[in-house]
Length: 104
Image (cartoon, rainbow, N blue to C red):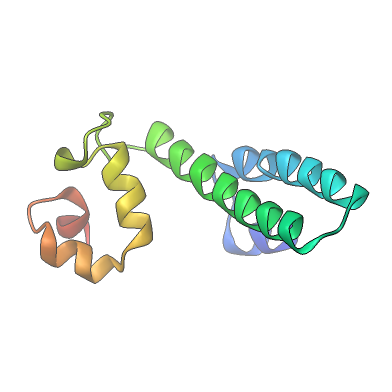
């Protein structure tokens, strides 16, 4: 993964990305004790949700791509999470006045 980061380019949020793996590794240790389908499902959903939430929060907090508000109606944190879940072109169609639509 680090080799890919070097090839694709380093950025300011790499420490956050790598730090996200710490709780995921802890989930793996939790899972080692008893491997059951339910626990594996919980660990899979929790780890992907943690990675998504932590890295998207870091992008919102560290960059100027989104306003530093929480509300969804003015390109704040909720809008950041929503935009990450939707196709970029649909987001631009629904919010033509947003900075993302005019940024290209």
